[in-house]
Length: 384
Image (cartoon, rainbow, N blue to C red; front, side, top):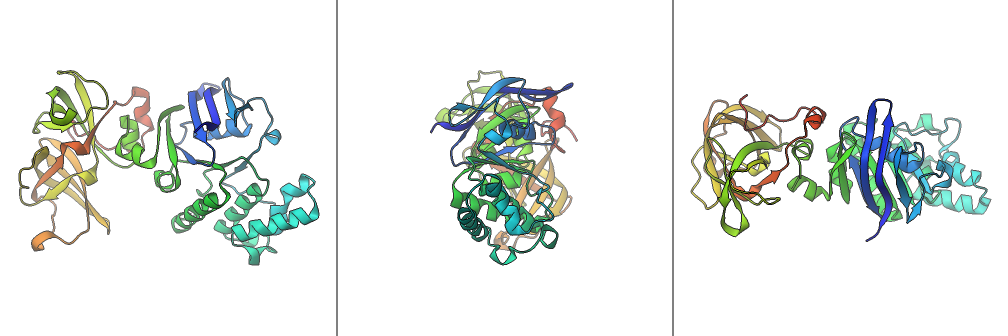
């Protein structure tokens, strides 16, 4: 499928800050696409380049095959929703939604019909006469969405639209946003630093760091097969392993030696040679923890460990264990314990294990990316 909104090698600098650095990205028509990354990574600058609020220092922006780089915002069929809602306080809900088509000179009958359709879409027919100060945060956000959609844009840009809402309301609004997108079918470009938001609603995600695009893929691809340790650490939690390639293994796998651990098999993400240093990641939920040593199984890595910390989270329990001089994180879902096994507690002797195929080979951090990960997990190859 051809790209609908396209950034071609765009760059933007603000003084000494390189906000966007040679980014290329294609977004398909009708996608719910998210730009995800920590503060200062360049995602909002990318959105402003699409809207026309900023001009790139280099590169071009295209919409449906047309170069829009030099067009002013009012000549782009793109609307933006901001975190602040930006509603007119003196206007009612109906008046706010009608503002765009009224300014465009559409007929009264067309405006009335379009406003009623938008009120039904956001389920606020009974709130149409209220002013913004009489609405909740979620209601204001819905009005802002309706006011943008009534102009029939080709692309809707959403800049951290739920950041001002509390957790429960944010979760509910995410579901509503997804339903609205499915109903109207236009392209959504969603900017967020919240991985949970991006993972739950996006068709695809671009993870950004330091003005660059680290990886583009579906939520499952980004989580299950991150290409860099920045992506692996920013999307969820992970354990890092530094090892050395021993040679080829069965089924196209590679045998890897990690000091203090049994030989590990993994599928290579790229061509590797014996003796080459490699970097692996194993998600905490892929690791099993038990009091008894698990039975031997082809490809399973089994290691004795001691529990150093336990955090009960309701639906799951998070463990930090010491294994072969490394601090490793394990997550176990709150299922019934097999055979009436007693709960695992602090300082217990345990066994951890995982299948070689549950780890994945990734590129290391670039030095200037390390500071961008918010509270990165300790690398498993290092002492605490």
